[in-house]
Image (cartoon, rainbow, N blue to C red):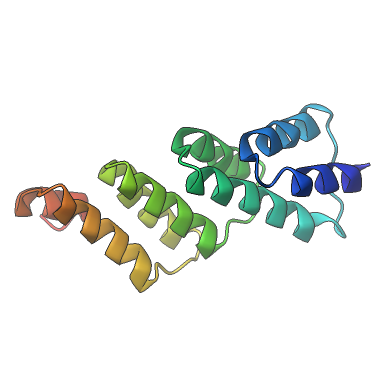
Length: 139
């Protein structure tokens, strides 16, 4: 049955909020992931989360991220990067830096683009050097 949900979610890629609703329904119906479908499950969650970020819905994307952590679903570097860039674009630098911290905890190394997004957001907001240092926990 989970295969049908994956096909529906895949078909709703242009409508990421509806795809996220289907993911929630899968959880509510207690559809368990089997070893064979686990990789697909991870990719579906990541794809929906990245789509929510791309379409400018960071709050829902962050809720899905928390849901992935709660369900111990692997999070890849691309998913973290999408979250960081999304929050940087919205000017929520503290949340972006928090996600960069969590990347390290989960064994993902922030790429140059990740750091460029964070530093660019800080410079774009014309924050003081003190704010930059406090965000990066260097002060």
